[in-house]
Length: 448
Image (tube, rainbow, N blue to C red):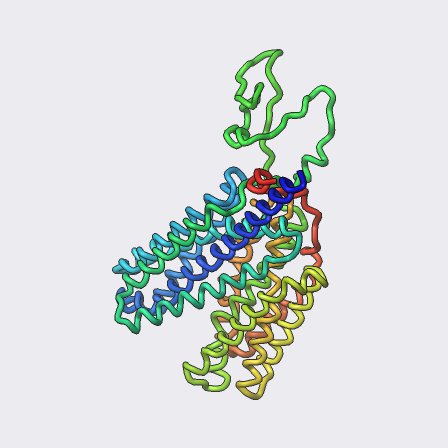
């Protein structure tokens, strides 16, 4: 008996480790696709003959795709689980990446970018939900390490473009290679991902008044097929009887964002807004403030990205000791101090330290927000909406800094993200650990 239980526990543990590795692979694959996509943009712009202004407009328009993907992904995840989202999402993103290589004008390029962005939005919901489930099963923080692998995947993707360009490959061949690697990676990983699991109870269910005359109806997957006015009979089948014998009518409640969910979304917006500013404006800030050459100014984003990646590899252990609220709060303070250094630094090297401090400060914030969102009632919908607000920050932050820089300077405009991080410090309490329902994935139950 002991040996049987020991073998079952060992098998379950092995499956959980395999699921964790598979989620690492998902994040790395998504980052790899983004790295190849971003690395090929200059070649695509040259081949299509579009100006930088038109290219910027195309990217802004196609950003609607990633927001739509996140919203659709939340609904699909709620009904069907996250594995299909990851497969379809990365598959569509790979197709969109290949289509980018065949774009001959701005219209086709915009369509290809939108397909790519929509696929990434779908995958973001499924991928982050898988990370939440694996983290919940482990019982300790591991979310930030997953996000570190996204950054590593992006670096590998950019390096792949660099090497293949040096070897004389065409843009189409480079994107085709990247898409093929992504499809193979997600196909192999999907078999080890966690299946549909138990959700935290919805608040409206807990608060619903009990009634002796209305029997409790257990909601099932068939409920997703029922609209308002359709009734539920025995075994969950639609019952169309009328008159005195007509059954109780069931209405699917509209999912409403709770106060905590809104605070999580706003926190994600603030943190990802600041991250977007670093990605888009760090190099230009060094160029404008210190007249740095192109090769030197790139170290601004490099310092930010490296410190963020390294920080995400270690911040999970910190979160396990001090808690997620302290990670978000202290990280936001450190990030704000880093930007203060950027604004007032008299030398380029001290400015690089400031950008590195910003990356280290932001490394743990967004993973803690996603973990908290994934443990809310109706977690798939909440996570998709938190992601959507985060995307608004990613695209809106650089635009805000651009408007301020137009009137002042890029360096002075960095006061705006400092203010955003101060607000994030005040909202950090929203990521306080909830107590999710006892978790056992179906794949693990089979082995236990």
